[in-house]
Length: 233
Image (cartoon, rainbow, N blue to C red; front, side):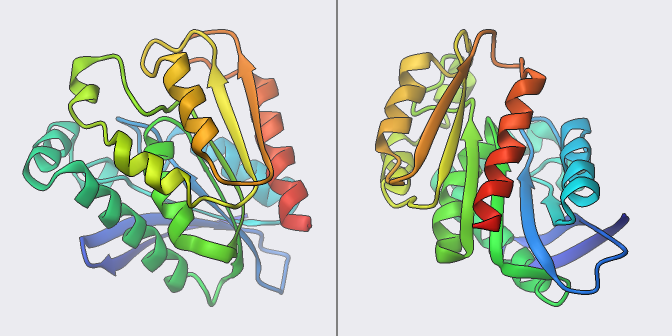
């Protein structure tokens, strides 16, 4: 497996990312995009774990980029300042554009006509508009730990229920939704309502007991199997 840092230029500014690829495959491989959660970054533990599995066990290419004001793009306080200044709808548009620019830049090295996306929490917040923007190139998307309304006041202030609902109604790729039954960040009903709005004719919801930060190994196995099944189809 090779791990190559990259930086692409997007309308919102430089976008730092990492591409993981198998070294023994001569042809371009389908591309899995990984969106990290809030306060994370492109190389956090779960992202590296997923990337390693998809490359070594499935022979796929994997890419991750830092979210706005996360990782090499800044710090979390800057993120809140940016949201107040620009508004979350604009941030959603910028992040979708960042992903599209990244995908275009990776076209020589990966099969960018066959894509999957995985992102929960903040990764799902940005993953929904990104998934819509990817259009028919997106063959599978794993979302979750995210709803139309948040419980903590700071997150409620950046909720965009109308925008998220509109985007969800345009998301038609096969979708797996991960729900933590006792999520204290995004209440259960808020997540179930979002799932109802997803327009995909092939959508599944799998619920697991536990709070927002919990992700059982069986859930990650479901994510991987769902992505592989749909990419191979």
